[in-house]
Image (cartoon, rainbow, N blue to C red; front, side, top):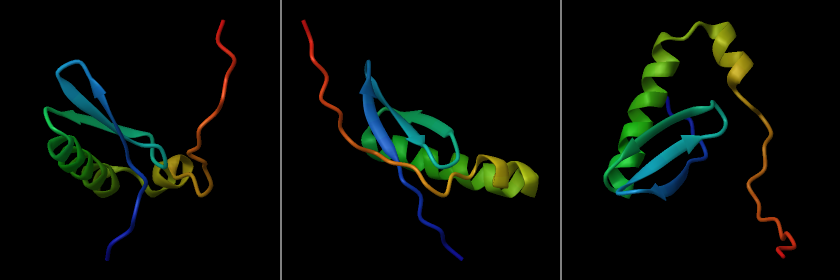
Length: 73
């Protein structure tokens, strides 16, 4: 069985940080692909080892990724 999760990847220094906001699980890598693969592994390990109550508490069913315009002086 497969489940899809939203992933945010951003450059940080010489590498990339990856975040799954639905589970609040993060990882990193030296390339976008490595950060993505490492996050997949981290999510799989979390889902395999965490108690069902923790998964339910952390799993966000509704969240938004959007842009926000802010006045800068």
